[in-house]
Image 1 (tube, rainbow, N blue to C red):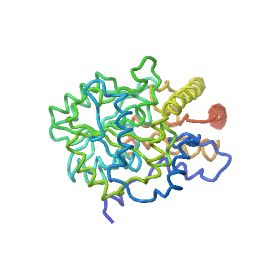
Image 2: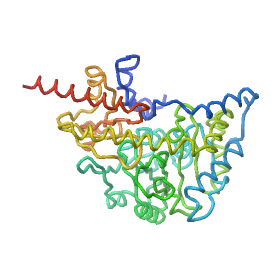
Image 3: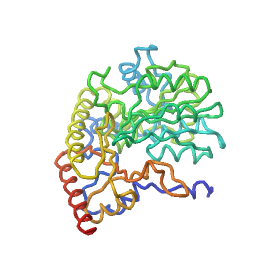
Image 4: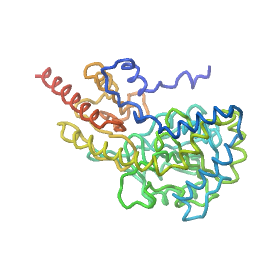
Length: 403
């Protein structure tokens, strides 16, 4: 076994979840997924595909009709500036995480320098490390419960030696979202340094700012040319309630697509056809799924955040995008220990902030201390209300013990 694999840290999110798995009394908000099942017409498309005998391999890059549907979907969101994106820039993948790993495999050699903007989903920090890259993290800065980007610090970290920049916007866990002007600044700088950008934009439709063009967050695709060193990752998981299906896609420069097909072959060969058929129907009926999902998630956000803001010692603001409330709990700096105690003592399952920041010999980065992530994608918002009550009761118990 390679040493780098042996030294990989286990997911702290899973570490907390494992402490509460199988307990029916725990309100679980630790994973980034809704507790609502995939719409029945999407499930039926997969059933119909299996019933018709579609149990064989497909093209490495995905079914032509699915790639065409993805191209039309992406054009409707981001094709206005530089023209149609086109199926020739797309690869269908076995989930968003597979798309991310394929992109890193395609771009990063052992010893290369990679910069990532954190806090961020831990897989994005682990993938370049697995390939032997040198990872530098530039942290967003917490300001009264919100997170902001120090653009000067980020640009200073990206030099001609930087092979790849990894950025997730809208961000998991913070909800921070890049503006179009910030994307243009980053892109211009990376053009000058020759740095590739890997943009994880899986949450772009989960965006709650009014009067936004196409009702989605700004994308690097809105400012980039087709031949720019840019790879964008998307997933069916969040906007279509399809987390367990493992279906995603990559948008890349046209010259990269053929070689990406070879890389897909040596990873998964292809996404299952029946899953791709489900994705095709999801795209064909986007209007029946995504607007309702976004409206419901906004309701959930607007239910949870004011309740948390009313809890003494909590710092939190409403996220512009994503499906999380990332909040700081005063006096509870060890977020992993706090999250574990909340599972055992309060029946409340949250993700620790430590999971989303790089670890140092001295422990978690200072910015991560005291932060917890709450996934508010609940089918019944009343579960969120109950969860806050459990948090308040637990905090009251801690205060009573301290007296």
